[in-house]
Image (cartoon, rainbow, N blue to C red; front, side):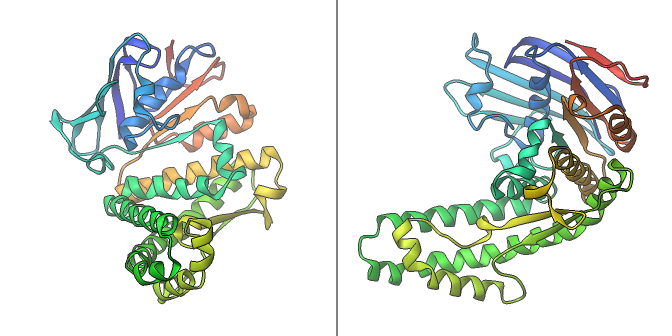
Length: 351
């Protein structure tokens, strides 16, 4: 899979600009704050329907305009596809695939696939479990629309349960009504857990391979999916825990157990990297996770996803830069940087 053209109109810093990309490596070169990351943001928007910078679509519109547009043309293995996204300050965004409007964001997912990585992705290692759950969710939503809808149902049930915990004044009344939400939460949770566990099992050997490659055989990365419940009786375990924690949840006003609390434990040579890894080691692990994500999406979809790398060269020494380019040679790769002086056959795009 590759993107051939990108047209930005009223998007971020671009009033009206068209970019052309080639197969292989494309290097976007420009000074800081010139809009390099905006290009990757636009491409990723067409992959998952959301920005990696903001949850408010209106913020991507150029400050002098009332509306904006992204248009991308992609070449897939068996067909070409055109995606258009329209942004307005007074309406919700609209999306077209090959000129046909879609009604739900889920219809966009898996149309094109890609992986985004920047130095900020260190939060995948260093920050809260939310980031690692998001990592799993992005992969699974890109490769399985059923998971996207399943996750949406779980989150909706969770919101309703939390609302009930906050608004019910009589605890005895709560005990008689909350079981409806508990049952749905357990059912969806069991299914999501199974998909995530399967993903981690598939992801682990690729992460290990990428980590050994980037560290010249010195660092072995291992992953473990940590959940409060597991096994065939997952739903029964969760239902029991929800009942046991009901009084505590009632006092706090939120649900304290479930797949929304799950975690990925990441180890480097047997030591937890989040707490004990150096910044350089954490950076290597984050990059290895992203390279493994590339392989998993390829295996699940049958196509090489796009690889979007934002200013990663500034964080890597020359040896690891070369390793990265070699590792990603089969995928169309778009890299932003302030300068590029390596001897390599790449397409240079100057901002």
